Amino acid sequence: MTLSRRDFIRSAQAVGLFYASFAVTGGVRARSTNPFFALIPDPARRLDLPEGFTYTTVSESGGMMADGFFRPGRPDGMACFADPDSADKCILMCNHENWFNTTSGSPFGEDNALLDRVSKEQLYDRKADGSPLFGGVTRLVYDLKNNRLESDHLVLTGTAANCAGGPTPWGSWLSCEEQPLKPADGTGKFHGFVFETPSSAAGLIDAVPLKAMGRFAHEAAAIDPETGIVYMTEDDRSGLFYRFIPDVKGRLAEGGRLQALAITGWKSAVTNNWPQDWGGGGAGRVKAGQQFGVEWIDLDDVESPEGDLAARGHAAGAAYFCRGEGMDYGIRPGSNVGEIFFTCTQGGTSQTGQVWRYTPGETGKLTLLYESAGADTLDLCDNLALAPWGDLILCEDGRGSNYLRGLTPDGKIYDFAKNAHKDDGEFCGACFSPDGKTMFVNVQEPGYTYAITGPWESLRV
Image (cartoon, rainbow, N blue to C red):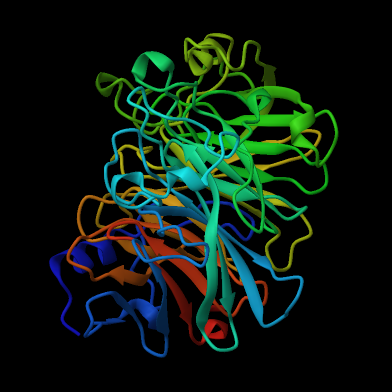
């Protein structure tokens, strides 16, 4: 295969790290010899994949669902759950990142004709003109045996910019609003909250925000099953890394404490590595592989209408992270330690992405695992998923062609998939079926959900 200029540069710039022990070798290393570097062009111009891998289109935005509503646009964060009734099926809980000013992709059809089917309790909010907000969540049941969608329906609606989120160990999906709107913006209520949606929901649920978890530009959530603590990212160039300690493990609606991470010995840290004249803490201030001790700062007035939670936390000593987005919790093969991985989409000297790890514990540790050398290596990493074999699957929301990248335990970046659609939409919502044999992923525009299968065992190093 003839390499494009992009592929050649990316090959030369791959940055090495070794995170079996998470000690970084540093410098530039040669392109991975991973056999899946070569992607096969898709005649349908949907997904270019490695040899032996195939995809099925699970759903497309705009079609009618089993409940009679229309499938919302802009599918984003997603998680996969086991179906309690059948090992041959799984359940997908899917966010829809419809913003306040999004005009297409409503589940209620033309002129919102279906809105009268939604109760006041189920529709979280309307605009000042009476029209509904239509960010929210859908639930999909997928037949793994026959590779087909069995049903889908609306679960949460009336919310704003439901971007990422995260699954809970008790079988629910935390859907996070990225847009912290207020009534002065033209809404009826405040936004920027987390909503819990059970994966067993048979239809629309009452939309109840978990306000104790804070009001900010929520992105992703991950839960340490040992403690029930919820970790959260904030999609803002001056965002914090949060944790919510529930009063009762597994019962988030009963309240708890919200805290922000501070780096020991570095008060009010700025971790983006941008040059100082770009408003950063200085290029190379944080080295790949560098590990930090952490402290946690209690936050108050967490649902402040002023939207100043991050600024107040930073002033008190919390660290800034540059557009914290995707996050996942897991235990890598060969380890017995749970870890939380998260991305900073515009972190790094090149502003094209960082990958971090937080290891919970009595003395939690924060490590910068990887920093993109440039857009040709990794371009704006967003959602991520920890693959069953230990690689990190990184979804790009880049400024050119978007890829699914893999980051291996020995520090190699490889291309797993390319969005071949003319719209060049971002990848999001990557997750795996309970048996690890199917990866699901969304392409936000024009709104596709895919199921990918193939020889995953060949990627297990």
